[in-house]
Structure formats: structure tokens, C-alpha cells
Image (cartoon, rainbow, N blue to C red; front, side):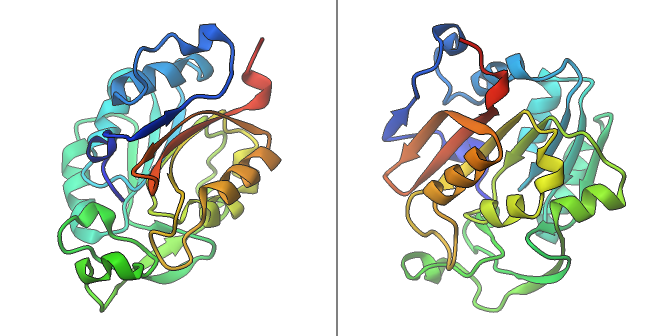
Length: 238
């Protein structure tokens, strides 16, 4: 889980061909501009699901853009979760969950990055960054999108903000019911494996297209990972 501010120095930037009035934002790499760009597709008081909340930096930013939003924020690392709770306790309509999102409910392993706790992950690191991680994982509670939404009577969700270190596809595959209401998804993407069994950008895009989403923007950092924005196709006009 890498905080958004630590991921804004791209090598390549890609924007697909969409109507020019949708591209009024001068630089989508600026987090405030990104949220302003997304705003056109969301209601004034959206329901937002954020996973990979870290210290609540993006939670606070989104509540500045949407003061009346209802936000559900997940952070699995206990130490980061407590910081996040403290950093967001002054915000209204924000509920924090100390769970990892994945494709089953119960208990899962969680690997801690020594140098950057925000990069900690359910999945074991690949060889090139293995030395940065504690080889002995902790255990954290986990759930799926649909089971969580059903158990908490949550619907609809308008916007998803994911920073899950290559685990995004596995989470979304167990959120088919919830995805029916989602209008936009901003997510980290991986062009090469960054964790053992991490999903690829291409598989993630194919899945979201099968669920009625269209990619409207993406960035790529050093050819390894980046971010992308997907919007429900029926919301895009000529």
C-alpha cells in the first residue's frame, strides 16, 4: 500500500481517446486534480470505499473534495490503522475497518515492508524486493467486498479507491454485487509482478471491461507500476 503522494513521478502517461470536455484537468498526476476530474461522474455526496488507507492522507483529501461523503476505509496493518483512525477522527461519516480485503473471509497472512509500511501486503514479495520485507508475516482479519457489504447493509458505493499492491483483481472478483452500483474506480496497477501471484494490469483491465467499465486514464512509473481510472461506460458521453 503505497501512499498516493509517493507515487506521482511517472515516466509515461497514457490517456485514451475520450471527449475533450472530459480532459479539462491540466495534470491528473496531481491528486487534487485527479479528484476534481472524478467529481464529474459522482453525486454531490458520494459513498466512497477506500482500501489501503495507510495514515488517512487520501481519506482527508477526499473529504475535502466531498465534505458530505460517506467513506468506508480499510487498512490491514494494525500500526497504520491506529494512525489512520487518529488522523480521521475529526471527519464526519468516516468508518474505518482493520481488515484486509481479499477473495475469502477469515484470517490471512500479511507481510510488512521494513522501510515503507505502506507497501506491506497480503502477498509475498518478489525476489527483487524480498530483502525489504519481514519474512515472518503477521496475521490479520480479512473479508470480501460482497460479504462485508452484505453484513453491513451497505449499498450503493459510488467510488472505489484502491492501493493494494497487486491484489486488486482478487478483491474485485469477489465484489460483483457491489460493482453494479460503482461509477468509478481509481486503482494501483502493475505491469510486472510486484508480489508473488500479483495480478497484472492487463487482467485487471479485462475484468473491469467485462463489468462495464472503461479505462479513461492511466500512468506508468518505470514500466513497473502506476495508477489507472476506470469509469462505467454508460456514464461516458460523446
